[in-house]
Image (cartoon, rainbow, N blue to C red):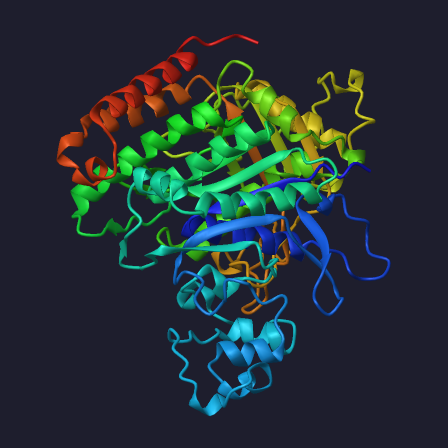
Amino acid sequence: MKTREILTLQFGNYANYVGTHFWNIQEAGFQYEPGATVSEVNHDVLFREGQNHRGDVTYTPRMLSMDLKGALAHLSEDGDLYDDESAEKVRSGNSEALTPQIPWNSQNIEIVQAPVTEKPAYQKDLQTSGGASQDYNFQSTVKSWTDFMYSRYHPRSLNVIQEYSHSDEENTFDTFTNGRELWKSGSFDEDFCDKIRQYIEECDNCQGFQVLFDCIDGFSGLSAKCFEELSDEYGKSILAYPLIPPHMRNFKNADTIMSCSIRVVNIALSFVSLIESTSLFVPLSTMAQGWRNVAASRQFPNVSYNPENAYQTSAILATFLDTLTLKYRAKDILQPLVLSEFCADLNAYGWKMCAADLGFPFDAQIPDVSDGLNDLQTKPIFTHLTPNSEISRGQIMKTMIRGVHRSQIASTDARGSHQSADLSFFPYGEASFKLQRYLESLKCANSVPVMTYQTPMPVKVPYPDEIFSKNINVSGYESHYMREEGVRVSSIPVLAAVSATKHLMGTIDSLHAEAEKVKLSKVCRFRETGLEADEYGEVLHKLLDFRDLYDDHVQL
């Protein structure tokens, strides 16, 4: 089996929220029980095997994350996978732990350190008993993505920007140009690039990179420089997911209007860097609008969540990523795409930006074409996750469904021609073919390759199962009976799709219109960090040129 490794990068606080859920879901799907069904996922695509200093075998995400000082809360920058009791005492300020390591009198040593953040109950239980033991009320108690982190990371995975501090009240790392200059400063790029190189050298057949990043602040510029480095140094596929958080904090010393303008400029600069340096990018947000103001959260049947809660909204985006990425991390028997093929199929006409759709819990009763449904709004089976755009006809759509069983598929239209199709290569091929016919009948897309995956997505602590309605049973399906209080949903069926569509022209147009309104001379933050009016004008022109690619649509 080919390993087909992928390195994941996470830039920004919200990106790490999404990434934490993503890795938690991965590990929730690991099979440890004797006689368990063989997994359909090749976990080696995203995980690496290693050893800690005690010789124990470790299996950690092949990942590098970046966040601001203070964002890790109780967790040290080295993580806690390789912790031992002595190291824990040193970090807690216990001078007795220093006695055997230094030759002088430890009683005369003054230890200066930042206040220690207490571990939340969930992390304490993981450390002592290895599992959850109570209702942790994550939706109200989570202050950092490290609070609900189940996966353990390699010491090189966590990286902290010391020049800026994380704050829940205001954003100090404010502009694209700040991030760009930070990459160039000192040894930052050299140290981070060395860590990338170490991961790549461990791989047998690295196929590329997937990148999650906050595109509204300084992390947009930091990731842009990283994209340039990856493109120049490795020449491999780069699939990027720019994230727009559901709750917009004002930037330091800026009111709401000024903060909105800064955010729009950051997103515009970020999108141009994505056009120039990545293979494909898919903007993600649980909000319908994302440029100047966030408004109207996306709605999912049988799901209720707080639209400003980062812990809950990031779980929704991670659900999309976990399902969609099965396209390129499934085992060979399912005929997965390699990352380069996945990107090339969607960007063949220069359409590097795609739209995201998610259906969860997915209604497995896929309607027959004979039901006479000819309007997408009649029975929507998914919800849009790309801001400032709506569900529309896609030229190409790649769809992934998981957790759909034959017994839950409505009978295929007897008048259909599916008997002539060769389904032998696809597990649960009937579901794939039927969903493809349904999407085509709704005129969602001209080309709808559908991949099915038998295993549903696991829903284990610390995933927020409180977002599901009580009429969703433990298997994630809608039921006539209410789920009893305290009974968790254990798994859910999910549909995830990306589509290349000419209707994204309107999305790019709306961003250009907002960016053009900004008078750069009045936003001193950018002027102070080296963004000239001529450079910004060129950015606006590049957005228009990119928009024109979608205007000149090609019929497949």
